[in-house]
Image (cartoon, rainbow, N blue to C red; front, side, top):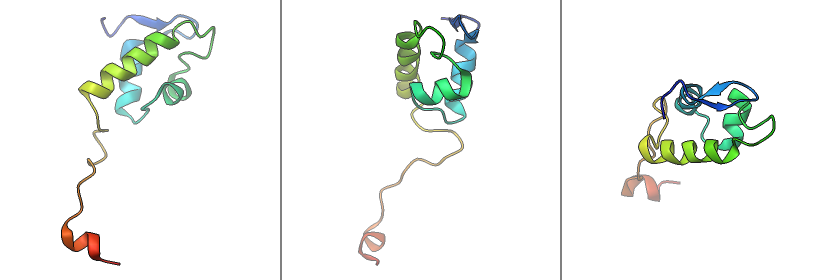
Length: 80
């Protein structure tokens, strides 16, 4: 699906806008709705937005501006 494809017709939200919202930290359908208004009209695009979220979760699992969670070292685990 090209980035210019309209996913939510009620609010004219494109795949590119959803991808941008994902990269900005909107990591769920609800967060995407808040950021882009996708799914807030008739709701007919909800399954497509969910599918895009799943695709993005698999292809871009961590926000670019936030470090991935690291496993604490042994010293850090025992510190109180």
